[in-house]
Length: 187
Image (tube, rainbow, N blue to C red):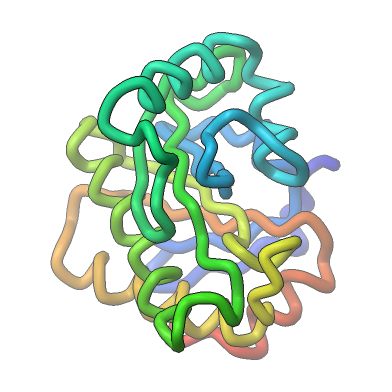
């Protein structure tokens, strides 16, 4: 699906851009993968990124699993790999919370996904990042609640950091972006 400029919306003086499109086609420093804890690919965004990026991503994910995260990446944490064949330079893999399984800490963990991904971008001198709607698919996070938590996390991070020039929030369908627009915290 191609990005439609008529559907794009910007916030925070253009530093945040909402786009309906395909995250695997984003030409940014880093795209974020809504990964599962195994880091070995899956369905949805995770599967699309692994398919489009090719085997180099999986190879690096396997190395991460052999090292620090041998039991899998915990919810809220993030790691970075090559982007393989994707137009982005890198992929940040983060595991969103499964809604209803974290004793009321879902919003905290979802915010951590966004903030830890942004931190990795800065640590790797990357100035643009594209996020999917983390946890709103099979992990069952209500999109309206996710919009509030994600936008608040981005606001808080960008308020203390001037190195990120653009945060793109990529939505698969216009209706997904409409839900976000109805519940975000951007002004």
